[in-house]
Length: 396
Image (cartoon, rainbow, N blue to C red; front, side, top):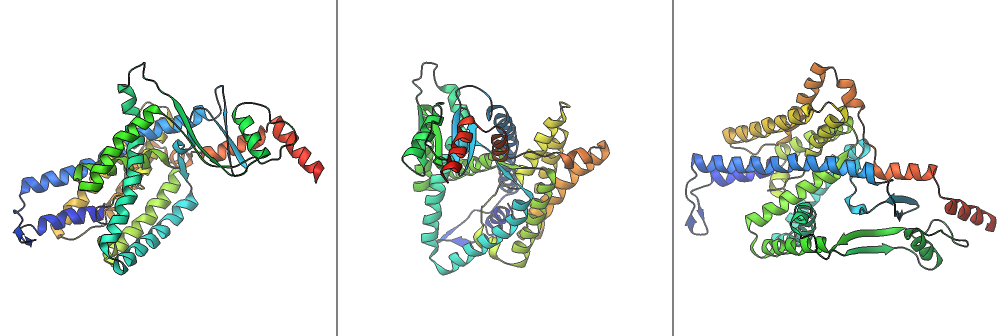
């Protein structure tokens, strides 16, 4: 966010200077207010709607992972996850405290690597590579984002067919056993365990293909014209998917993550020119997932209020507004996390102190659906798996 803010500021400060033989029209207070307002709105929309979608995603993983009939068995590495009608790609990824502690270090190495890459290679080739990268990922992200809305416009008699993209490791008898389990049939004798681990298992239907086609039109528009609307659509889609599918497991992990990014942002903006050089107009949704966590914490309290979510949301608006104000006054790029982290952590903690719910806030924890599935699987191992393991021990 800080680099995006500095970019916007530089555009207004340098108005009126010659560029390609022409003179830019001078900036006006109305134009600056419109630009900053648009920037603020584009930052708030993914937070609000992404947080709501993260709640539905969390409820879906709890209610659909181990219930229902017609099970579909998934094998990944040596673990099995039982799911019903849900693609593994839509399951949220849970960030642990260890992941949070390593993230600023990994981000710093990546940022420095990109900086050196820009210095060594031609910017033209780098931009082409990044354009193709965001073209592919942007289409997938936008397709996943618009899918729930597009489903409402399909008629009831729409011929919707189911498809599955499956890529497994192994062949022969093990693959046959995996196919049997996937179809709800008994494993049978003579088959070893673990069965073929799945590398890719993606389920989709005709409606998803229609959304993919529509998103591809936007992708081609972005690739050919680099239009700001297409660019912003991809940015919104990336951010919404990030907030929806990246979950913090508890508030302490969120504090570790934001604390590390606080130092990371200040160092790379004030200490070097790396951030301004590399990360122009780049926005990562990592800090937003903390606000989504507080919404899920609100719901877990079962008080029919969203106090902590609205508090953190208002804190984000305050911190971002303060960043814009200071940047505009001092005419210098600002590390947005310098203002956002204290606000987004401090305001909810103060509310928890006032309500006497600090212990509840820091004891709230979400489990990783993959770990939960593996734990449940180990406790409720199928008879076929037990028989297969006993047979394997006898052969040895």
